[in-house]
Image (cartoon, rainbow, N blue to C red; front, side, top):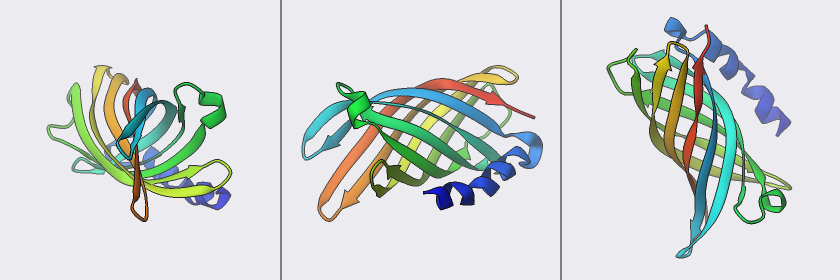
Length: 162
């Protein structure tokens, strides 16, 4: 795990120096659920991340979050580390900034699991450097014929840094 976090350090440095200084960070809360085998249970997720837009709306980012069951969060919580690609739909530099994302997630607690994630949402920039993030994100874990979807509706703040 430590190796994965250290290997992601260059991504954080790149985000800070991204073309056009279009880097931003964010923090979020996400009520949601885990769905598998026809059943859904409530979950909560909280976390934050960094993203850099590299060119023509294409970006890369990393985030760290905690996800747990709605009724027993402290007993069921586990960590998620994600590396994602982003696409921000044109026009760029507007108040409304819709995007789609796809990437890899590592779940960790006492062991690790590999997941993939996808999502879509929008940032609404109500100030030059501060905005509202609304997003749907689904982390998918597949093993043999078993699939679990950890999905959530994210609400948070996003901020540009220069």
